[in-house]
Image (cartoon, rainbow, N blue to C red):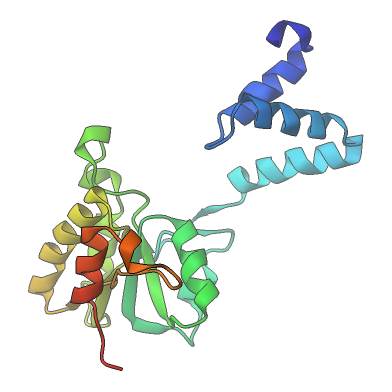
Length: 200
């Protein structure tokens, strides 16, 4: 198949294929879509890719991505600076913000502790988190890492570091998704649903 494509097109297909969840067929479709763009559209597409690398950096406070000196959440006077929600990636912040319910701040770890993948504490933004907790502003830290082995291990490790600082450490409640049936719930999910139950 590769032999029939012009080399620049094949190179584009190979690059699209490097994206997570994109196979050969999807990458080929995207490459042909780019090929069908006029020159101005193609340049705009290429410029957008270059701009995210040249204009975006980590917020020095929460480690989220921003094009400004400090991200808009950390810069906002209306956010509750006494609460920090710890997340694995900047994408998780977008998910929380969609709820329009959370009014605190965030801290992005940029990964989880995973010895099998060679990711230790030094590869995460733990040092920056501890620096934020050194004054008396923060009263609660919410662990919002995913309920995976790595997510749980990271949450436990961080809670052991934070608790001696006299800061309340909480974990997101995990349980049954809305609209699901009990018969399809696994034991761990059901246990968490029971543990995280609330009064109605």
